[in-house]
Image (cartoon, rainbow over all chains, first blue to last red; front, top):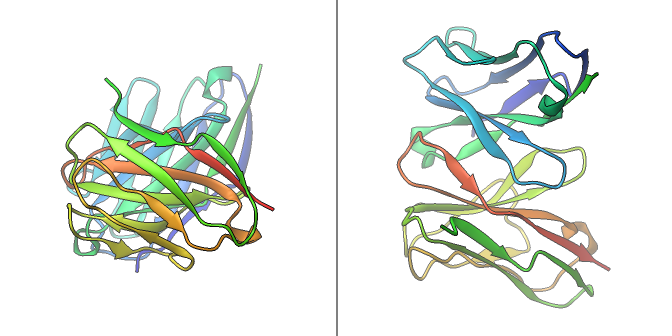
Length: 113
Length: 112
C-alpha cells in the first residue's frame, strides 16, 4: 500500500518567518495530496490540496508544491502568525485503493510571538 | 448543518467489555472512514466503506468491526476492548474522489 513520510516532526519558528513541511510518498499512482491542520483538541480540517496534474497551488499565505518525479510535496506557510500553531498532516490518495487517504506522521508547528 | 457527528465524545471502558462508537453524516457522502490517533502518531486507518453495503480493512483493523447498513451511519465496534485500544477515534466522510474528507469531532476512548 501507500506509505507517506513527513518531516520534520516538530518545527519552531519566529512569528513572521516562513515554515516548510515536507512529505514523500511511495506509490507513483497517487493522485491527490491534501494538507490538514489540527488544533489542540480539535478535529483535522483541510487547509489546501493539490492534484497530480498541478505543480503548485497557492491560497493567501499557504502554498503547496508537488514534484511527481521525486514523489514529494511540500507545504509552505509565509508570514507565520501565532494562530498557525497546530499539528499539520499531509496525506496521499490512491485511486486503485478506493481513494483512501494515507496520512503522514504529522508536524507540530510552534510559532513564537 | 450538522455535517458529521460522533458519539460519545469520551468514554472510559473496562477491558474485556464491548462498545460501539457511533458516526453519522448528513452530507450524503458515499465514502466513510474510521481512523485512530495515538499520541505522537498520525492518523491510522482502521476500516473504511466506499458505499453503503460494503466495507474494507485499513491499516490497523484487528479488534475492530464495522457495518454500513445505510449511507448516513458507520458504527465502529470493539468486541472485547484491550488497553492498547486507548486512543482518539475519528470518523470521516468524503463525497467525490479526490475531494475534501470531513472529520467528526472525535471520541476519546480510555480502556482500563
